[in-house]
Image (cartoon, rainbow, N blue to C red; front, side):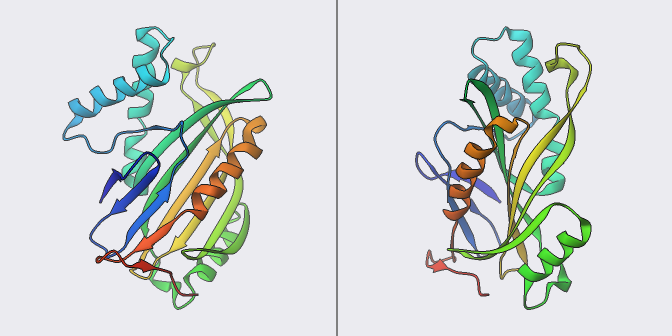
Length: 222
């Protein structure tokens, strides 16, 4: 599975499952590298990203930021993340940030003929947040809106200690007919930016288009 930049805004996931996924990202996102040949190249790419994202910071802070980004890659691999980006902006004078991750996961074999309904029922049972079933241009999907606790690395806090933080998120799961699920998630720890980021993410999700191996458009049944 590879992530490619098709043009200034379009992103593409291609793989061995017979379905190509395309979507549109807004301008202003910093994107984490996923194409490094080895750990040394990944480290160099993350340092370059840190310098781009934090141009006014000193080198030590930039290196700490790159290390913090690197620490997420084990989680990315486990979760099947194929794309990860973040954006920072000001909303009503408050500096706000949001992340967007895109993953491909195996669909539960028990999903049956109504995989969106199965996913929604499972997520409601787990109490993950507010669950809804929606229909996107590419087919049926399930949305989850909720909150989760996480920690900010001490290298990035004034106290020098890890500090807890609550992240609000919107997760969208789109079951594909090849036995996989496309999952897209936006998360932000800054409540002031929620309306802006949730509207932005809605546009990203609605832009998803699916294609077969020959480039013909697909719409998932349901």
